[in-house]
Length: 189
Image 1 (cartoon, rainbow, N blue to C red):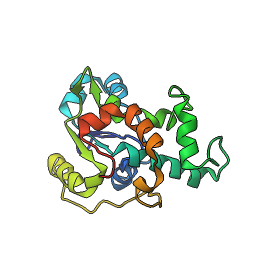
Image 2: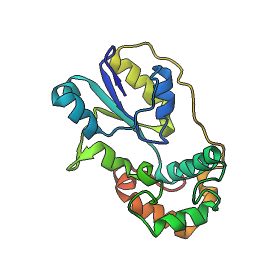
Image 3: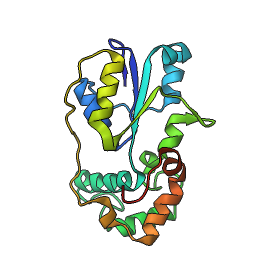
Image 4: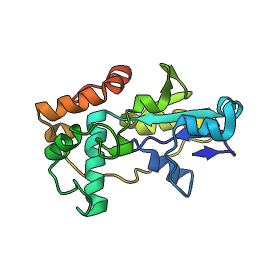
């Protein structure tokens, strides 16, 4: 999402609270472009001039949230949406590339969406787990009053740890190793 009034670019990673941010700024369509697409469209000068930010989320929680959202929206009509969480993770573990990977294109590790050659490309990375507090930092940076951020597109489920067994926990740990390492996530946090 690009906001020219407040001169910021928001890199919206799926299932990290980005819909709440886009709704707050009354951005009509949800924009899930990566940093490279913004740079390609607007150039490095705009990228460097604007305040750039994104949010990340614990990968185990993020994957469960994506699974639950698919079930809520699709009504079990798409392939894999009628599977238990365990079977869904196991099915997609066998195809880690392409559309059928865990989360499809939404399952791309967060690290890959925010870093190039191990260099962070956004000015600020907030955490879903601290959504309001980190949004307050963003408000300060872009020069607007702090405001309560609505929680949109929320899925209902128990704590994510209740859905994993050793095997599915390890599958997500391997697929999202860079996220876990760089952002310091642990299973159960």
